[in-house]
Image (tube, one colour):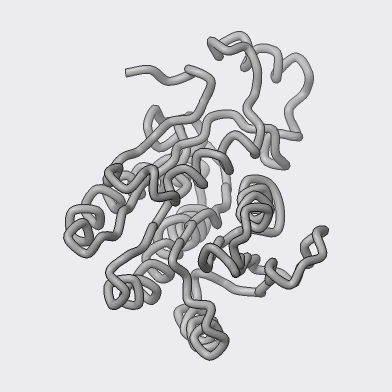
Length: 238
C-alpha cells in the first residue's frame, strides 16, 4: 500500500530525478515528467515517466485526464521544471525572457491550478515549489531566471494564505549551488571560487534537496506553510 501520489515536473534528471527516487524509496507512487521522452533508471511500477510540456495547457489537461482515469491525481505536487537562458540584459532576446518565464512561472501556475481542486475536495495536500537563491539575491546575466524564481516566492505566500484553511500547505525551496547538470559546466577554478564563498565550503547534492522536500511533504511539517527555505550551505543569510 502506497503512502500517496506524488507529481514532480522536471523529473528526468538532476534535483527532480533525485526527488522522484527518494519518494519511491519511501513507498509513494510517483509520476515524473519531462518535456522530452525519457525513462527512469530505476525499474519499478511506482515510478511513472510522462512526457509533458508544462507551458501547454492542452498538454496539462490531457495529463490531468490520464491521471484521473488511473486514480493517480497527486496529494503532493512538486513544481520543479525550470530552464535557464542566461544573457546580460542588454543582449537578452525577447524569446530568452518569454521562454524562461513561461516554463518557470506559468508552468507552476498551470499545474497548480489544475491539481489544486482535487486537493481542496480531499481537504489535504502539499504544494512545493523549487525556486533558487537567484530569486532571492539576484545574479548577473539572469534577469529572466531570477525574476521567474523571485515570482515563485510571492506565488507561494499568496497561495498558502488562500489554501491554509483547506489543510493544504504551500512552500518554496531555494537551492544554492547544487551538483547537477546545471553546474557541471563549471571549470575547476570557478567551482573552487564558488566554494570559497559558501560557509560550508562545498556544493550541495541533489539528495539534500530531496530530503527537505520529503520533510515538507510529511505530516511532521503540517504547521509550515508560506515559507521560502534556502538550502545553500549558508551562501545567503538574512
